[in-house]
Image (cartoon, rainbow over all chains, first blue to last red; front, side, top):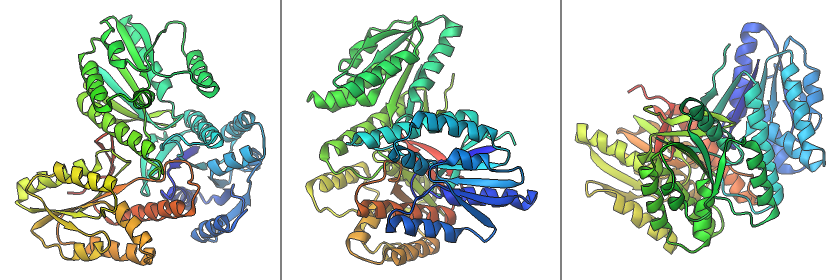
Length: 174
Length: 174
Length: 174
């Protein structure tokens, strides 16, 4: 079972995904795993990562996967419950590394489909503003939009978080 | 019957509108008409237009109306099913041409109201980011927001597309 | 009873809040009060303020509170029905004045909780675009996002306005 958790900046997406994972762990005794895609390349990002770590209880194990997200998903086992935070940072890292974005997105979607445990995928909505001036930002939001469409079509459930509250955009069958 | 299809960049708005139009054509035997508002003024836009054309089957007839959208709507006949893609590009063209935007919006809304065939109007949400630095971008998002409000009040149905999935914001009576 | 009215630029948030307040006033005989947070520091803002004033009927009393919003809420009495327009402008004023934003937000949330009359709080969604280049804009959208989360958790009802139409994100118990 995979859930896509979308929302704007500081909308409470991560908190919602953690809460959902912890609620599931409480009834299934699953092991909580955070797959973090952030790279701490400056002080602002370091502070953000630390704040997110502080929000998680000691029950969580963290694995960092700023680039090889499909590999990290492939290493998950049935007893785990995983949160990926977040897809847009992974996409940004993938573009910055000069990788073949379409191929990486395809590999990610395959890894999500093959994942043997519950998965919550957090990602930022970034395409609701004025068209950006620079071509890289336009390419980024195009890739992000297509990634979200593709994942939303294949997964079990999708929610849009607004002010910490979930709007269901694809209801779960579970 | 007119439907407003809103959404962010690369949210799957166009694909959703095409799918709805094709589903309707299958039961009514209507002729599918794309009213395209894009102008191919650079390579990026040419590539985008070509990609959108490739997504459409041979069943579609395309009419270009980067400026005279109300006229193009006025030429529609009862046997057609039309998709306008998209209103925000038309608005941008209208502003760039130095036309009277309020008058053009009023004429467009009148043409939508008078349209004798099913109509799907695709448009971008552009006002959910930080206030833009430049006055033209602020004027653009103000006009777009007011256009959406006005059309949403008068038409039969409105949906917001997120990750390819529709959220109903005004349910159809049909 | 407090309602959070969120939405993008020119989405019809203010109009919706006014309509809700006026509908409530019609059945309760409450006195309509606008708490305006805008400061008229340039012509564009002056025009915007004037347009918003023109939209309100003579039944409204206006109080300006660009900075001391908690104080303005504290002065409300049970017979009133108040609209705050808007929280994001207040936040912007608070940041520009160099105040302690976290402390101001806490005081505001306390004042909302203690408010003795129906309250409609209008605020802009600003975090759905590309990450802004400048640190101040990033801080602004972080503060706005956290303010919305905090208020949404504590209040009775929250709606997201799209093209003038409300999507319920937290249903009212009233």
